[in-house]
Every structure is written in structure tokens, then in C-alpha cells.
Length: 348
Image 1: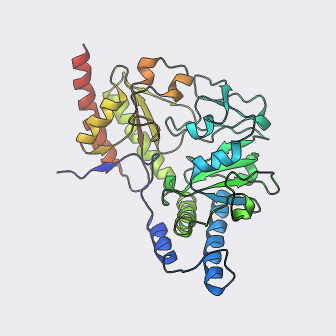
Image 2 (image 1 turned 180 degrees about the vertical axis):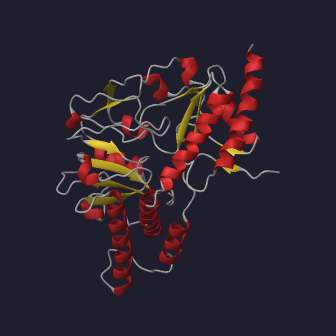
Image 3 (image 1 turned 135 degrees about the vertical axis):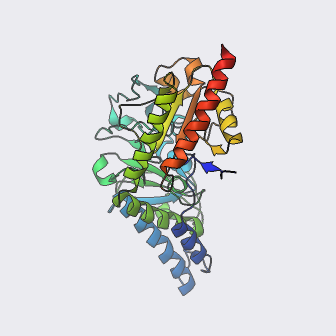
């Protein structure tokens, strides 16, 4: 029997060996980073090492890195109390704080008339479509692009950015808000004044250490061209499906996309059914953002791009990463094509 194949990297990437090693080493440390004794200073040093690793991988040297419990908390920290606007393609963690009224074109690109009052993601988790960020942007969700695309926060022109560890091979439950030095920010969690007074609470040493190591390893992979190899594998899968299933729509084709993401629309074949069918065949994929999977709903992202409910409810996301090879995706294409043809025969 063929082994199961994990093709849902945008939901959560497999834990990197470097992150696991750093987390294990941090477990040997005893103390509180706020303590002034030797044990506390050792914990503080480990946290500051991770902060420097994340900043370097983000191209954010000189910026401020505020560790959080994830990108969702970072979004709340960045957006709460502000009058910000976004488009319907944003993750709920951002859209929940904004007026969702920015225009989205059919190709998935967003018009931002007032960048200083707007939030705009770098890349979409469902479609993979990459945005051109305007200068002066208030907040950008960098979560999906970080580690997959060359990202230099200092050159992006935005005031604040959101990142999450588990999207690039770190542990779940830790992320960061990156902001330009001197940015005015009100803490949402009050307490001991950790994270430069921006986020109270004893730091998650184990998670932060894993995040730092994962970010450093991700930057090395990017520099070595591993994501260009991933893009070639993604394109191989897309070509195979186009050849065998010409009526399937590949979202974002022709646009700049994440190198690992393929969003397919098969009108009339529910996304949830596709996920279950492929799961039984040994493949882990999703019907959209992991945070909304399991709900019987249509893709809000595709609706914002102008797709009708039938198409928006018939989407499947395949997201891959380093280590996935051509034979893997061709095996998926073969099983998916067979399942789609059976489903289409039933719909006639």
C-alpha cells in the first residue's frame, strides 16, 4: 500500500528538525526570562537569539519583533481600535477587525486607495495569489509568504506585519508582530510588561526557540532555491490535471502565486466531498483555509473574486513543500482524475 501523502502545507507545515532540536535544547533551561540571575539571563539569551533569527529571516533588522501566540493574536494587537479597511480575501483573523469593503478584481488583486488605513495580505492561503503591497500600508499579513517568497520587511513599505511559526515548519502556538521601530502600539494583554510592554505574559520559550530555528532554516532553503524546485513540482501537477481534466478551473493561473499552491475548482463537486474522497485515497488536502475547514460553507475568497456559490463551494487546495517529488504529485493527479470522472458521471 502506498504511503499517505501530506499535501496541506498551507494549513501547517511539517515540523522542521532544526525547530525540534532547538525546542528540545530549550527544555533544558530553567528560569524566567525576566529574572536577573544567571538562569533567567540564559532564558533571555535564548529568546533574544530567536528574535534575531526571525528578524533576519524577515529582512527586518532594526525593526521590532513582538512574540505572540500566533498570527491571530498579532492581528488583534495590530488592528484593535483602528479604523482599517480590507478586502474579502483576507483571513478572518484580519477581516474581523476591519471594514471589509476594498475591491477585488477577478484575478484576485486588491485595489487599495488609502494604504495608511488598510490591511492587505502578501499572499492568499487558498489561491496562492501574491499581492503588490502599496507603500505606506498599515498592516500586512505575511504569514503565507514568509519562508516561501523572498520577503524583506524593511523594503515592503508597510508599518506592521503578521507572521506565524507553524506555516514555515515551526511549532503551532507562536507567532509575531513585526513593526517599524517607534510605531505606537497599545498592549491588549496587561501584566508584567514583557515584549517591550507590548504583550504581557511570560514568554513561551520552547515555542519561540523553535520559531527562531525554523525561520533560520526556512531562509536557508529559500536562498538555496528549494522553493523554485517546489514550484516546478506544482507546475507538473497543474499540467497533468489540465491534460486529464480540461473542465477543471485552476485559480490564479497566469498571476504571480505562491510556488507551492494550487487551487482547483470543479463546479458541482463539493469541496468537502473532494477532501473526504482524497483522504480515503491516502492524500491530505483541504477545501480552503484550515481555519474554516469542516464548516459547510463556500469560499469567501472565491466569492470576493466574483465566483458564484456553486464554484466557490467546489474548490480544493493542494499545497506542497520541499520533499514532495514529481512521482508524488502524479500519483495524486491519477487518483484525483479518476475520482473526478466518477463524480462527474454521477452528476449527469
